[in-house]
Length: 237
Image (cartoon, rainbow, N blue to C red; front, side, top):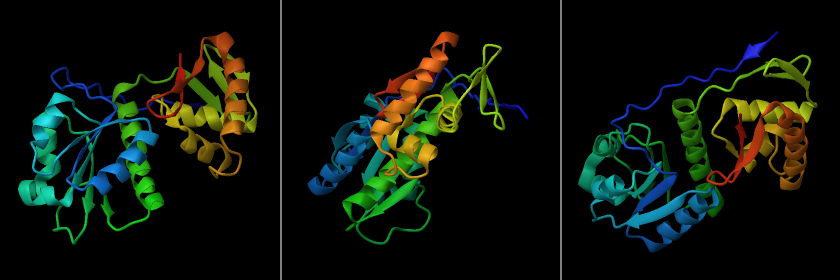
């Protein structure tokens, strides 16, 4: 069986502003800003901040972000329609939103995730990573061209420019993961997809497998590059 990989492509209308791989944090709590910034920066996004009483819409219009993290105090100003208003202010409907809450949140708040404090650093990092990875997949589906590949899973073969390339099981898992998300994937996600456990083999094993796969695909004009904004890898053809 041959499986063609053709991710849905929906180019953004030209009137929509292009956004950066950037995060805006709107909060007056220094501890929240420091904790969330730490995890966001680890994922390769840049970070800027604005106060909870500041003009969030002006901030996002100056630099349209991929991710907005807001304190629950902003809900008192903007209400449960915060994300709708953020989207309308930028013309982008694919901006991810995380709300950091210290108390019960009114019903109907539209957000990708909520971080309820107090919470461990690891739990906060897991929420941020999940939302950022989902945003990366969304960006890939909207902005990236379909990869010109086909695969034969039973034979672990990849067709590139009318040539079939035989891969090891680990190489095949790695290239499948990258094909599903042409914009690239973070190292931890690739480690999980390849070995099933990010801690099983570690980053050095990922480097080794990627180098081997890169060598096999290079003669066919396919590269595997680092994706600095994701701290990961991506396919280029």
